[in-house]
Amino acid sequence: MKFISLLPTEANNNYQGLKFALWFFYLYLALVAFRSFTHMFAQDAGLNSIASIIIFPEVNNLNPNTVIYLIGSLWGGSQIVVLFISIIILIKYKSLLSLAWLVFVFDNILRIITMTIHNLDPDYLTSTAPGGLVGTSVMLFVTLLMFFISTIERKQK
Image 1 (tube, one colour):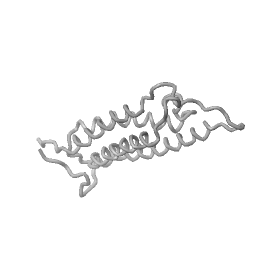
Image 2: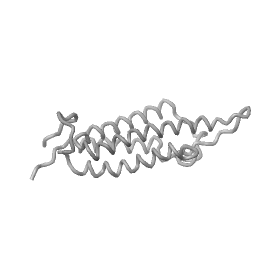
Image 3: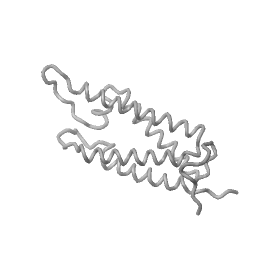
Image 4: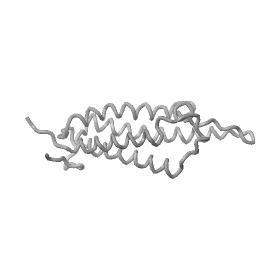
């Protein structure tokens, strides 16, 4: 079994790895697109409607949810930038697919670290969030597996 380079000498559209990692990347980006656009454009940045975070009461005529939604939207903007770069890789630079998978591996690792450091007490949630620690751990496994699969050079016919 041969492996392709994580950083090829030339970035081009000639992906030498297993096609499964490429096709699964399209599916993964659909999930990333949904998540990114929800965080950016939903009124609550998806924090109440999807992540199940409670709506906080006003304090001294100030609504803390406004700040929370702003931060969630900024996060969505950052995710859209990563999505845009990933789409460019799919269109023009498929030889960088393994590197793109590695970016998503680190994204999931950092999410898990963040959720561990800033763990929300169940009192802050109305139900179990789909992107919580369990869901992110599953996505870490998936992205790690896809990263390794993407580095395996396919046999040329």
